[in-house]
Length: 512
Image (cartoon, rainbow, N blue to C red; front, side, top):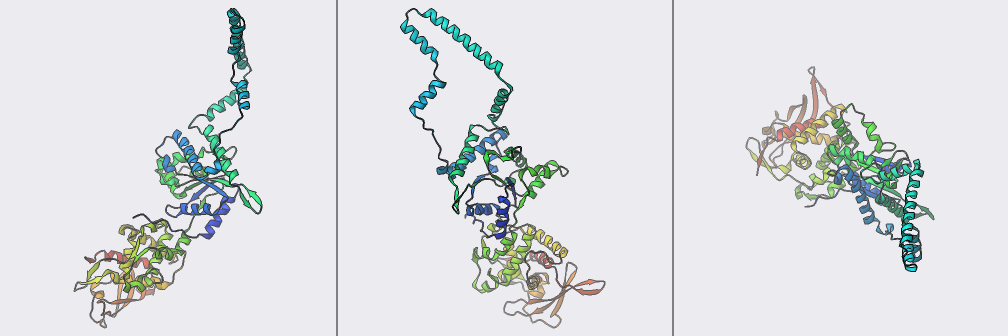
């Protein structure tokens, strides 16, 4: 089954910010930074499709990772020619110069015709026995050639020597200053595209700008990343402040933080990273952050996923305004905030469905359908994105962040009843199974109870549920027993309860 493509999300102000950044005339080199999987390529594709003032070409450095440096320069030229010919064949209009016969004849006489053999033939024809004259003619011609060579050698000045040196260097393949006939042709082709694709706006002509996008630079091994970075740095003339081939803009797409970590790992933390990376952007790094747009679009994303929710659970679980979905969304948003989930991660989420197994619990070892329990449903959905080990690690990170921020850890605020819902559903698997999975009447001694979770006491009430064979839990409050004086906690750490329930649920007996 093919993977679904990344969902396109309208990102209003991010586009506005990037448009201002790229429109800055001083930004000839742009470092576009975003984490892997955030949809940066999708964003750039959309941006340039909507803006007809740009001519864009793309390079993919992964294609050069196994090539030698000298070959990379040639491969870049090959890919640029391929991109130009495939995208703009009509605008380029490869030309074969058309000269008149008279003009060609004139140029041949001036530059290629040798007069001496012709004169010798004429002399032989008009005067028999003219070999001695021809011999004298040859000697005179030899002396003339020697004199001309000597004159050229004597009169060759410093400028001629430098021009010859520069010409040889430009023709040297793999050199940072290489600019051979193919390089010149690429520049000419780019100019033709710019000239042929002028945009008419308000009866005035605007010449489009050429943009080279170098995508996913940090998708390579560190060994190749900096080698290719160095090669691309040679495509910029720091004296004239011009990009090679005449590109108006060059955009390097990568994760700035990831490149920095690679650099520190390779060269050590004491080495100046900013001095190295500054060569790849003109003013400052453009930090692409679409999290708030993804978060606002989560419901839309999950509505478009394949769904398999039994009819009796649809009001309870469907990705609309169901309590389960809102709790799931709350956890996802928290995971986005700590950068462990991205838009690309949601590609892995193929189907929004209920867990398929049953559990055996309680003194009677009765069987229960796992889809009846929202906590098990949540874990089932989250396991589509993470392994259990990673999920627990991320929840522990969120628990620490919750404490550090007094619960204000998300960009989008959620009502506290969502956290209460999550705590109550988690308590179903934290409290003793024999108390929860019990169909008997709740006696007076059982109506109130408490359980310790991460040095905090959760006080709860039990109620009967004869139809399903287990009991309901209602959270009364959470207290902190410090100095034997219980202090009520206004906002308990919801992630402590999720972690504790996750640990306990791993011991459940699964029934096929």
